[in-house]
Length: 411
Image 1 (spheres, helix red, strand yellow):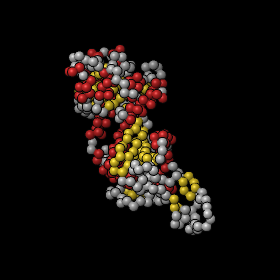
Image 2: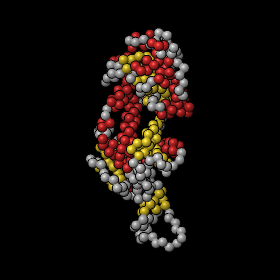
Image 3: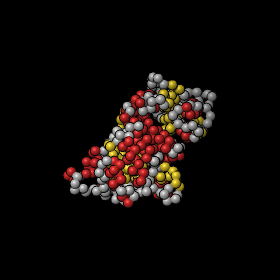
Image 4: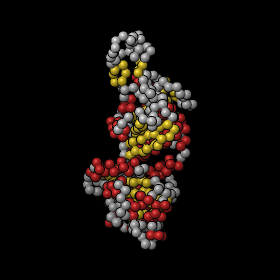
């Protein structure tokens, strides 16, 4: 493992600050140059001299440093760093960062930094589980902050639960893998993985000539299949009826109804690392398909519909479940509906987009997505569906990688 980077390590005031000394040692061992920024409260736990000896560099703690060039040390430090790592990140610091407060050197550095930011939270389990802390973590996720841990276990207060700072070796492993993924070309980010994608609409027959369907063109699902192939994946595409040419080098499974798509997905999902449910599957299908064409007779008629099986939910329930990505096409309250679907169906990620507006979506060559996961979100701005699919595939690869690292760290 090598981390040949300029790493700015922020240390805030918690008992886990003692782990940061070992973290400095390991980072330097892996080839990183480390500079430490320490808060006044952190000095109550570990002496700045300890970090100076381990890093080989002066330790920074003052926002207004008369000895710094132009008295703007926070700017020069921020520009020096290839990444900012804050370990431990206390509940207080997380609250400050999430609200953009800058009343000391470390919080000011966060605002001034243009490099990637990683935090390793550390606090009592009740503090971690507090709704306001989770809201603050969610905000940081929207700002692009990557989270390492926390872990579950015994805490200094004598309680047990999530809130322990990740071990220094696990943090180093996380950074090493994250940087490796970041440096890989898009063509390699899913190398060796099997990806299952569903695309297009379904058709639910009323009689031999009529059916219920929707406006999905399948363009986004097919673009994702192409992007996944480009990313090095082995792709299986389960497609409803579309007029699109199938990508080369994939397994194509053609289906028509929601029941057929359910059967095709469920028979394959456990054999794939990722499932992307981009298909617009009918929520309801006719309870009875009439054997003959329905004649136009009465002024009104009634068709009884029955609920179809929820493919995403069933995939997420599998013992050997893939990393599950859903889609949500909404006409209003996009975030609320998307987050509800994310939680209710136990998905790893959901990509939501507006429909019924002149904003892309069905039938369009362009689209924009708001992507949500448990503690974060990211906006993928309006672009043609090919570019958008490549950006989404890269994001999926990053989140899958982070999930796997987290599971490895938890043992």
